[in-house]
Image: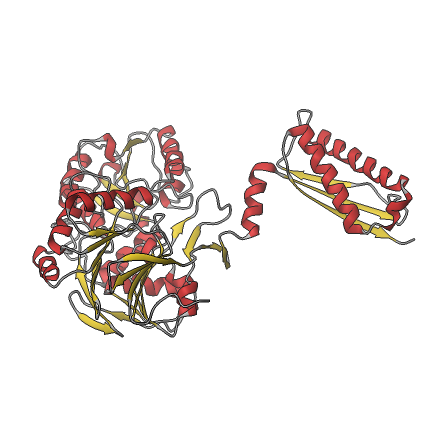
Length: 559
């Protein structure tokens, strides 16, 4: 392929996460050396039947692994870290992150059987060099501990890669963005700001976890029976807020769900749970009166196999919710998950459970980990970048941040697509090329292109059904047994057998026609099967108005 990058220039290329939420993968290229930032998943929707996870295609890193100096992981959320365990073998390079993220990542690598991954733990504000890149991890507040922005110094100028952040100054884990540090960085000159766009449409400020802690106390006071509160399992600050609020109203807390236990275990290991009340073991729950119990449960997005969904279906051992109990959703609904969340809510409501979401109460029970517009303005004021490049979101969010940046300061603004090759220096930053980007699908034990024909076939089968016919005949088109026809997902008004009989009659008619013409005796099995396939598919279309996936196997036996 032609050379994409000039050896004496500085580039930024978003390979994922700049047209969708999730699958974040970013690339910086300086003087021919590569630096990757984040490598995350996104969750598949109904467009990908049988698929749960999608990954960014790392082909560009794979083809240039000899130039790749390292992969920086900004925090422990799946959309920034979750693809590493699936893809690291393709581009093998050192990984640089903080202790908490490293602890989570090691567990994921072990789970996938990936070994010998060099993970380097970096402390906040520690400077280190990777080739021509000099990096500094700058602490920020977010909904997972030890999140950071990356200050990148290069021979061509300085870059600030924000990662996910907000300006909460009262996180229970103590992590926050400090104004003096960001102003100092801004004084050094920022060539380009690569910034989180998630909440760029939202006016004001995201809010503080301290307000959530107060809101939960008041909300818990309104509850009589058991309380089940669902959150993102990585939100350790929220776990701490819930535990302290429960203690304030005289309730004990239990963790329900494997991912919660893993995350909280890592938080204990990293020393983040000091002065937090102890949690109950699951087998102790039955001994605690309902009015003295809070359950923190996984499943805020309605995931079918998560704890809350199982509880709502009555399928979770030792835990049930019913009349007089309350389910609190202390999380936002990720766009696309509304249907699964509503299914869980309906199950709970049918059991008499009171449901509380952030919209249902005047108490603050959730704040976002991403910056609102006033926070973005504040960050740009501190850093004063020459160029602003919105990332992390769909086009609506990217353009919202671009519009805000243009209205607020005179810096150059570029809105990328996935694959945009942006030359940052020398000369004025601009999009100069484009590289191919794609998604990969985790299909159980294998990773395949998200456009793989097997996924396309499944999607078609969801809507149109399938017909399969088997025919055995001799060389003169005499049937040597009954024509076998099976259908899936198809029916007619008189019942399934009616459709099958009509299709069998159609096949018999076609075979009779073929038999009547001596010229057809030279046709092979594949030609006969194709003739039958077209006829059967056309017949289903006439009866049901559908165009099913149709396969026919013909076996000709010489007698």
